[in-house]
Amino acid sequence: MCQPGEITTIRFSDAELAEIKKNPPRDLSHIDPNKPMLALTFDDGPCKHTERLLDIFAQHGGKGTFYVVGNLIDERPDALKRMVAEGHEVGGHSWGHKDLSELSTEGIREQLMKTKEKIHEVTGYWSVTMRPPWGNVNDRVRTVAKESGLSMILWSVDTLDWMLQDADKVYESVMSQVKDGAIILMHDLHGTTVDAMERVIPELLAQGYQLVTVPELLLFNDGTMDPGKEYSSR
Ligand code: NI
Image 1: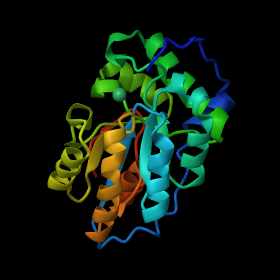
Image 2: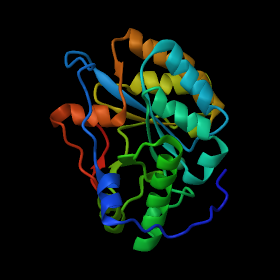
Image 3: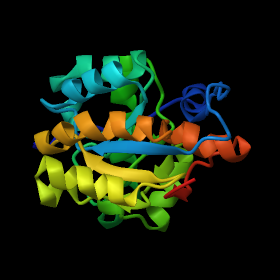
């Protein structure tokens, strides 16, 4: 899935960097503080199943968060445009699905900023969160993420959907682990995961869960979300 992308070093002016780092204020008035909420997150796309997942959200309601691999974006720019237009959140999952903790500072910067720039080029949106592949971070990654205006999003529920590869088992994995404030890790790369979402999304909504994006989940607490910091739940 991840061909080695052509990496060029990105250099921005101070004014561009200020724009890139800004974390725009969001209207959270649609979120009910008296009802539980959680964030469904999907890594490793965009891929052939991604738009079907967007269709499921469009049919039932709720929003998702997509952590996309930079070098796959040009294959499916329409999927990213739909994510932003339909109120979902999009962030980077590195340019080439790299273990960021094994890279130099400059290498990390290329992986994060080239992806952030590509998301902006396609959607007009400067992403404010990213997910490090395998959740691997270290102090170099924290420093570059902070410079790049990116909060690092881990998870509190690991569905193991990539291993299960079975829609019924993914459904059971999600439904048995959900709780208020959770960030749930899944992969739209797998058709079985998207199949499971045909049941999971309406079922969670029926149980009263608000399916919010990661920034909505985090900002709902006290209105802050710090670049360079790791978050795994509300
Ligand atoms: Ni991944």
